[in-house]
Amino acid sequence: MTAGPAGAGGFPLLAEIGAPAAVRALPPERLPELAREIRAFVIDRVAASGGHLGPNLGVVELTIALHRVFDSPRDTVLFDIGHQAYPHKILTGRAGAFGGLRQDGGLSGYPSRAESEHDVIENSHASTVLSYADGLARARQLSGEPDRAVVAVIGDGALTGGMAWEALNNLGAEPRRPVVVVLNDNGRSYAPTTGAVAAHLGALKAGAGEGRGAERCRNLFTDLGLAYLGPVDGHDTAALESALRAARALGRTVVVHATTVKGKGYPPAEQDAADCLHAVGTIDPETGRPAPASGSAAPSWTDVFGRELLRLAEERADVVALTASMLRPTGLQPMADRFPARVLDVGIAEQHAVTCAAGLALGGYHPVVAIYATFLNRAFDQVLMDVALHRLPVTFVLDRAGVTGPDGPSHHGMWDLSLLTMVPGLRIAAPRDPERLAVLLREAVATDGPTVLRLPKGGPAAAVEPAARIDGIDLLHRSPCYPLEVLLVAVGPLAGACLEAAALLEDAGIGVTVADPGWVHPVGPALAAIAGRHRLAVTVEDGVRIGGIGAMIAQALQDARVTTPVTVLGLPPAFVPHGSRAELLARAGLDGPGIARSVRRLHAGPAVPPVLGNPATAAAAAVTAAAGRAR
Image 1: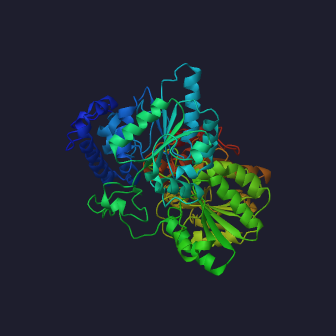
Image 2: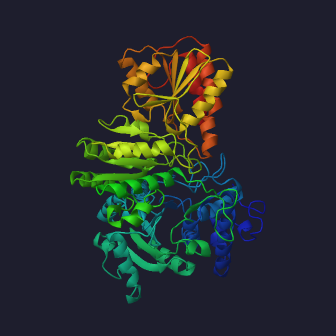
Image 3: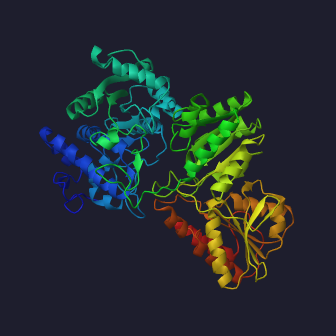
């Protein structure tokens, strides 16, 4: 991917930049012009496609300085999280690909090893980069290449994560490895950075005029044995270059403390106290407001949860809430505004959030831990041993569960069901619509043990009234004119796709029942009885199909000696790329037509035995192949 007139039309200087060598060749007096063009380019492209805006605008001069001082890819520049990597992509020859930013088959919104040799890591979970840097620098040392610098860019928000301090502990123990830690300090992640580390960084910035030098003052980093340079103005390219060259010359692990402004150069983002311009859909580039086509008055799943949680908090003084640096994105802001003492933001520290919640439960409270589904993976041991082992009443609300869309593999919340179904005593709910969300959340908070509520990204569908209810299981549809041949078991919001599939199957003369268990794990005995009255049961979930809800249902039928065969439709055990949620679900065969196609193939084939995980018969293998196209 190379920038050029076609990719950077209207940006004459960017049209000259095809690789970092061109950045190094620019005379210093042209760097402000380059920074202005990068900002204008990012605003223009992100306004059209959506993406991370504020973080990228804040690191323009920093990225220019990095590519002028270090020789990528011989030197390695690593970005923590990676949502600030758009200027890096532009300067490494990918401006021409921004027309497909975060779209199916287009440019990733994060660093991507498949895109460029300048992208070495692509995991976009926070607080990881210093560990990568420590290991890579050790490898360079072992290989006799200590002159190849390793640069790790980490934000002050990510520095609240425990893994970052585990890495600093190791880097400080052997500080002669040449690792340059660039601390991009803008005072916030999604929201203002809080905690003792933030206060310490604030004190360093407040004392910036007291002197300079590698050992200007004693601080956390120097006490760990690291060198420290700064604070330096992160929007002064000359000052940044000077600090980075000095850091490289030290030949040891050094922290360069750069202070930046999130959203720099774009007034709507700079003035965005609520951080709504951290990540955006399509927007009006003049105002930063959502474009008319993308704006919607309808509440999201997150909005509905936030509203219902506030109602519960008003009724019950024992309800408290925790999150890991995501008050607004997980829906906790309304409760925080109303009951600030009962809402805790622990920073980017998911493990601490879960075990702190366990402590609150031990103290007589019912904690609600609101967290993205993909990030709960980081705290699995705490869920298992600190909460479930003690049978504590903690409710986990997993936002962005299942296929999330344009953020790609690291942000799909598709692993939670396979992980959490093995946790003893944990109950899992998946609402199909806002009304069920309210009911299931209330039931979860009333449960004397650990519970999970799973919410997808985006806006919920209209409410679906059940045709009947049997022992807590909602029957959403029963074919009136056909024998009940196929049972579709919908997990949460995939109920809509199952109802669409049922209509298509009835057109083909196949009788269908659509069931929504609500509480999807453990599997209720009534579901086995319902399945026993059908020729075939098909489970539909937007999690990994191995070890997920379908596998649990198949096991439950086997344990109940119900011989109805079960086929599991879900996501393949693979890293699903970025694209829209609708596109990716369709590709996996999890939209209405895809489900109907799979059922027709199975219905036409011979009866098959119940399955545990992947279907093993020829007919079911066809379904597996269809769903596997999401690879």
